Image 1 (cartoon, rainbow, N blue to C red):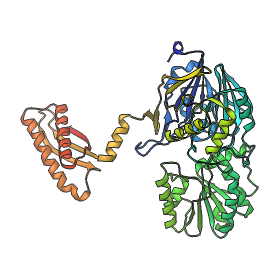
Image 2 (cartoon, rainbow, N blue to C red):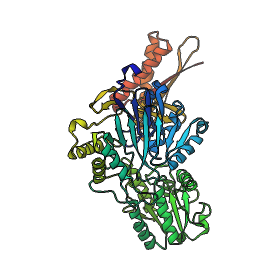
Image 3 (tube, rainbow, N blue to C red):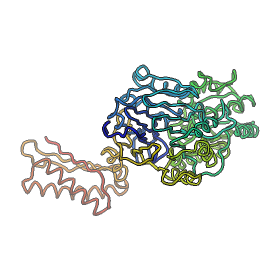
Image 4 (cartoon, rainbow, N blue to C red):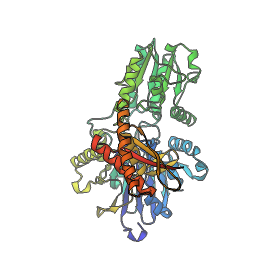
Length: 557
């Protein structure tokens, strides 16, 4: 969309991801000749995205308007809010603004991607500070979440103020730093807020989310009751406060702590350098050193709480970890809840650990980092927005928050459930949807990148469901006559015990079809290939109701 289509008296809010799923959060804010972008996250592939490593947002809209993009403003350091930056910044070379720990994690990511760290302008913003970006002024507000230095944003524009909570909870007793700055939310509300964009992840859950610090008693009990076993705790690498509490409990009970998992080691190193975690002297040891201590005097903090197949805990459970073996005498604690869709993978890991003789603790060792209904109501009551725009979550979560907003007195016509790509134009006079911008997901597959509905994914899905057949024949180079074949190879098509009889039948059927074609004088290779494909397609659909991928090969001698 070009500048001429802009209504300069209205603010335009354009979510480019994050509204149909958990993850890939990115939203553009546009006024006049200025665009700012809040967050730039990735999503992890779903079960049918075979071979895909990551999913990142389609930022075609930003590329088309690159001369107006002023910068990325980041709320916190989770992958679903920063993970796509190393890919997007290659094409959208603009500054990045974030709080201290968030920027530390971003810089680590950029340092691993070519020269992006040198090429990208970065500025650390303190809570209460603002940054001016074209027509916008963005203020960072202290909030609480399951990672340190999480921020809400007050986005000031000529059309009005938008408050974006980021991922948040109301924690009056955080492990590190201050509680959420409710006073600033109230101050903004008194002056007038045009719209509130609020975290919806726990909008279906009643009550309040417990403080992270409540887990101190949980860990104390677990450590006290398992004095004679090695303790292994799996949690999110980015949950620095959780790691801090585990280290505190280990120190209290005289245990050495080792950390396993690349992402876990990286984030703890960054947090330690930035004084966002406090590790007592002589408490942390390397994974190689931990074997020098009695098992009952050690704690292992590891990745893999979501059942990821390549994570450290998964490799311990299936016996492929090179340095750690799990069995009787181990207590394994899952200090997280499964992300929707990961339940089967987590259950599989638990069963594998139990089969090895380990004790597994799955309940009561986790609290959420997202606000429940009463906290969401509190923010709405303080901010008093004219318009409500639920964000961060699946569609059912957005609907749940919309109902809360309506209960709190916001008029139904002022509540907007957006989808990725929707353009919402608003000012004090009103708000309306005004078309669509390009949006969606791009898959990252090794070093390649492409659209989610690409032929590559469709082919992989077909291979996974119906298998592949390779049919080859040999023809005379000069006359084009059939010399031998067809020879048939199948993978993933039939059970082995059925294959011999099937191959004979396929070979006979295909031989007849190819011979008949040559008898009719058909020697064109393209036509022969089509005859081979059509014959095999018809055979398998008629007999097995399946459509395997068919690769006809013609060799000349």
